[in-house]
Each structure stands twice: as C-alpha cells, then as structure tokens.
Image 1: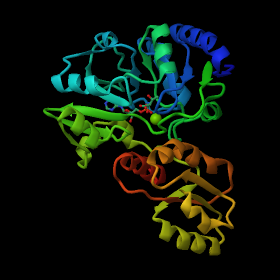
Image 2: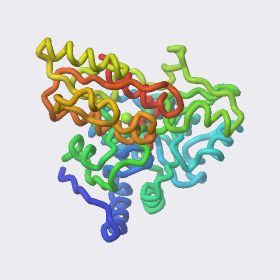
Image 3: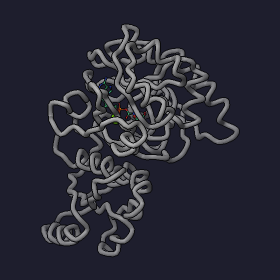
Length: 335
Ligand code: TXA
Ligand code: MG
C-alpha cells in the first residue's frame, strides 16, 4: 500500500481532513495527531478495519484498543451502565487526555476489546483530532501510531518511519503537545484505579473529583490492563536509568570496557558528557512538560546510532514524573 504523507498547514488542512474522514469511513487507516501522541485510526465500528490496525502495528490480539469519540452521544452506542463516578470524570476531564474503561455493548467488536467485556474510551482535546472525528462521524479506534513495542510516535516522521506502506495516510501536525499517552483509569466500586499514569495525575483526579484514587501496586490490578504485560516504548539498545551522579561514573566504566554509550539527560547534566557525541537532551530538569514532550524523540534518537547502552537520567516520581518514569522503566525492562 502507498502511504500518503501530508504536512498540515493552513492550505492543506481542510482537504486533508476531508480526505482522511473519507478514508476512515471506507475502512482505511489514518495516522492523526492528538494532544498526547499520534494515533493510528480506523472506524471503530468496522471489524475488518480494526483488524487492519492489529496487523499494521504487529499488535498482540489480546491488547485492546482505545476508542476516540467526539461527543457524549457517541458514547451510548459503545457502552452501558455509566456510573456516577464515570460521569464525574467525564465532566471534569473531557475533552482531554483521560481514557476511561466502560462496560462494552455488543456493538463493540471483541476484536477491538481483545476479548474483554470492557471498552476504553477517550474524547481527545486536540482541535484537529476533534475535527476529524466530527467529519468522519464514526468513533475512531486508535492505538499509538508505532510498531508494537517501540516508543509511541510524537512526530509525523516517527509514525511514517514505523508505518510507511502499512497505512493509507499520515497527517503530520508537528510535535505532540503532551508527549506521553493518556491516563487510563478504571472505576472499581467507589475508587478510581490508574491503569496507566499520564498528565492527568492521581492528585489532579482526586482534587477535581473528590474521588479516592490509587495507583495499582498489586499485580492483580495490573492484569486489568493487558497492555502492561508487553514490552513497551523500547529503544533498540539496552537502557539503564540512573541519577545524574551515577550516570557519569557508569558512563566512564562502560567506555573503559569498550562499550559505545548513549546519553539521555537534562540540559545541566550535558556538560558531564562533553566528549560523547551520542547525547540527547530532554530539556530542563525542572520542566517536566518539556521532558515529557521530548521523551519519545529521545528514545528513538539512538535507534539510528550505533550505541550498545543508553544511560538515562531518572526523575522524581511526582506529578508528571510518575508517567515519565513509568515509560522509562518499561523502556528499560527486558520484557
Ligand atoms: O493517548 C493515548 O491514549 C493514545 C492516543 C492515540 O489516544 N493512545 C494509546 O493507545 O496510547 P494504546 O493502544 O497505545 O494504549 C492503550 C492502552 C493499552 O495499555 C491497553 O492495554 C489499554 O489502554 N486498554 C485499552 N482497552 C482497555 C480495556 N478495555 N481495559 C483495560 N485496559 C485497556
Ligand atoms: Mg501504545
């Protein structure tokens, strides 16, 4: 299949949106921007189209896909038994980077839900994504636009390098605003369980909704999110996460052993690796929004370089730091 790559600007926007909505409606695959990361979209109500997503990504069939919607009305064809807490969450955070797990209706194919009786839904805030959803007028199933296991795409070029020849269109709107995927939550009884941390943090959910929120530390809870079973966000080289001081000594040690070392660090720490050409600066240590925005470009940077090991600076697990460290830990784990 020939992939059409379109850079979105004022003149290409309207025709691209129109064409992309037609492609979605006729069962094709479109990579489109959202505020978190790029999505690989297909008509969520077309089982054959959804199957194509799994094929294009090489995604395990038991890893369910998030459905993106434009309006609350679209929710009623996907789910039933919406609880009061779910209502509160939607009220507080939609449109925005929060994905909520609902009980699914039979209209949602079990191919999409990976065999589960639930479905994950989110209403993106990105105006371009909203316009595509509005014009397409069908819910859009969209995982992140990367080959399974690799870092998500936060640039159109990331998606193209992974999916060229596997999708009909890639719509490039420049760097994603947030850079890490949406927060995924499940409501259990009267509490909210965070299955995947994101920019909408535990503290924000608790504060805005007055609901008790927890991160799953029990592995049983994590089973509720099939995606967590698989290797994710992984660069080609092995990665180690260290604090800035450990990084310097570890880098010297590895170089003495003849290893080629890649460095993923913050602005201030760069000075410690003057002789190393393979350094990617994520941003200022105090600016987690910037770190998050650059994270996947950083993880992908080393794939084209010949490095044996990547040493990555660690961050405090607070606020958005929880999501950043969650992705880094997954990227560095051997699974
Ligand atoms: O920000 C995002 O959420 C991006 C953009 C494109 O919207 N999408 C995204 O999709 O990250 P994906 O497929 O890469 O990640 C979806 C995550 C996976 O970990 C998956 O296992 C989980 O959501 N998930 C999907 N449906 C679920 C369900 N019914 N129950 C539990 N977890 C579910
Ligand atoms: Mg993904």
